[in-house]
Image (cartoon, rainbow, N blue to C red; front, side, top):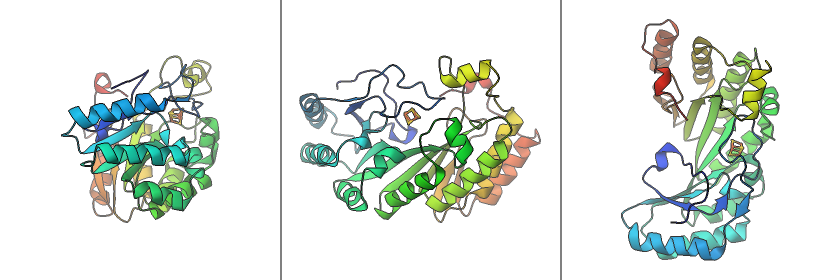
Length: 289
Ligand code: SF4
């Protein structure tokens, strides 16, 4: 397979065929993100993409899922996405699901009917990075979108009957705004009602704008206890009709996989224990992105 630059994928796509179709991220401005820094956004040529699909059809026959990268490949024009999915389905008919990263900008470019067209071609899940439901925080991290737009676009994915997996980020708010960030994010999640929520904890990476802001005091990394309180408040404010709230990413201090609504109270009790120092936290050396 032809891979250029950093390749990332959600943990749940660990056994998927990874097909790189775009390079980098068309937004590439979030202050905490170093993944595609220095990569100019681009679309790979048809010939390279078709060669990879052909290779997968011959060599990767045991894989039931395929994941399209890079950052927000959903930003591709609809015609190109249809072409891509038709070729994938023609050569790899045994696939059960195709997944992709999307952001509010790429989703805004798609109508509900267009998303349905993609779902009919096996696009089964969109991984949607929202980070926060708090408008001050969204502006601070340069997400380029407000909470109302994030909610509207997330609801469109649900209406298209494509699974929605949302990523949120603990600790990314301006100093002193942890409570607002966590409650507003929980409310945003409740309005979108995704199938999966993945909560990550911010890790300040050298070279990012966030790192510079931390150096000059514009950003303060919350304490472990405050990060746990954020997680608790976020989970408390999140009401899903039938979904999972997960904090099992390696960046977190307490790994949780909470089925909502039924397991919420049990998870909150566990977080209370962690906040009160009655539960061992993940060691710093074990944390990572
Ligand atoms: S939209 Fe995603 S990939 Fe792009 S800069 Fe922001 S966090 Fe990074």
